[in-house]
Length: 511
Image (cartoon, rainbow, N blue to C red):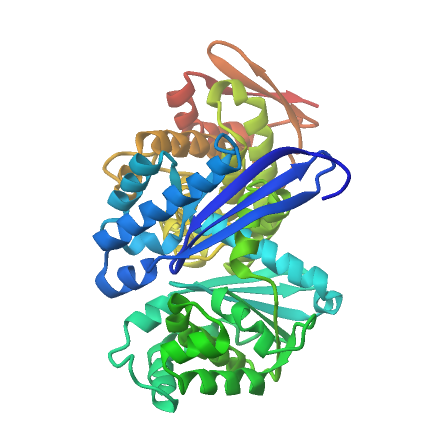
């Protein structure tokens, strides 16, 4: 810590697939921070979920005991009242008793645990990716693939010239793989071959998805691979060789779990998941015929917790990457780029000018912008009912930084940008909470009006001012002599806006 005295403290708690951990940070006035403590305890959550389909009662009580221990440490330090962000691995979604587990934790420990969704996980992986790119400047000029192999899923991020241009998630995880093995007591090459047979389909999909990319650098991140970094490269170096990784995989496979613990200084939870982690990473490296790879020597879990303790870190960068990913998706499906960018611009203006009516927040503004960018992807299948085709495409597309829940909201906003308005008879809309249904309706209303303003696909309405009154919203169109085409589109486009807000949209030319 610098000479500045700490002015605040914060902590983060993560219940992962193999461990529960906590970090306590002291934040000085100048923004520098110091780690006060880092604690980690084994919890077999992943083994329960992928082995039994639910969290066993014994594991639930073990988690409660561990969290009570974390709270006791905070109390001993006099930090019981500091902000604590508590999260669980997103693999918990696959447990049949996920809600019961979370309820038990909250009641017993008085902390509200949030489930890490895909949106937050991509932010966390992005922060790690950004650090790797900054640590190795040469990577910013190369086609770099970052492979994060987690307990349930693997995430692959493609970066070109320091910018993310591709993102895919696969059901290819360490615990998912290990718990499905029928012969986990095998050792040596037979167990490697058994794992390879399990993951063949997903590895083939990875090869297909990135078939047109010239991958020049591969960065591997994850709990298991980073615990073995010292066996893959020299101290203070991140670069290793494929044959070194392959040899380490063979050496580990030849050992029993107790021997792995002893020789490689692993805990018993990691000793089980480390082999599928290595085999998956080997297979990914082979897919791109890479002789070299990079693995950070930093502790994965400690870095994850530090990033969790700063939930607002890099939000602007993540937003920029998210919008870039959405634009790449629109381009992939042949959208009129000038049109969608202009609709996004108009949507943003309308969102800002009508805040007193809709009372939505900045995250909603982001979802509206993404929906505007993607609202015509359904034309790739057919112009007829393209809003329905778009719903399907968006729901099944990977968009960096967008969680599953947000992707559904965006898909529904685009689904209602023309023709039908939201109805409870629509199954995807019906499954939302009442709050989210209203959000979708409001955002759809704004998108419909914005699309009407760009009816001619000529970008001739570039700016407007807005006047709000009790029964109308008047848009004063700057530099427009005749808005007949846009006015003609309004009856079928501004209907939802009128229904929700009780105000008609009036267009006023302002040459």
